[in-house]
Length: 185
Image: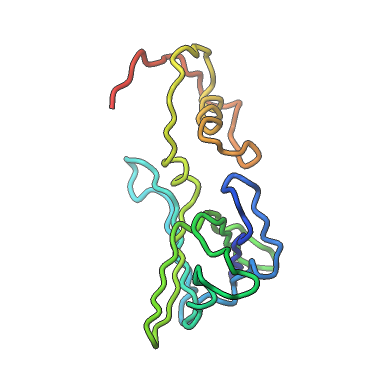
């Protein structure tokens, strides 16, 4: 199994459909594969109760690439493009087909320019983290009964999440009937 890792270096808005078509978007060859894949992701709940955390991805690049992935790079393809919140996608190639493994955003980039180390690491998070950063208020005048799927759509609309990047069951579930009269924090 091999991994394909691409970054949409030309993205300007997290909500836009990413375009991974440029040749410089493919960073698979720059991943550190020294004994491991250079990729480490975590997703899902660690225990049954509690919130579901955002999925995270750590991408370790091969040594010696600090200049290429520095925000001050002079690389013709990447100059002025190295910044956080760019879309990143990981696909596994297995048995002749690509399988989606991770989709998220580069949250931060860590550089260690020390001679002999020269490491670059991308720390990534998925859309759950972006949604958690949104402040959404409830319209207390909206007393329309809706299904739980419709309620999720309302929350995602308020957060600005694109409708074409959703897959929500609208038929199943139950109706939400009770609305809070007030809320406290």
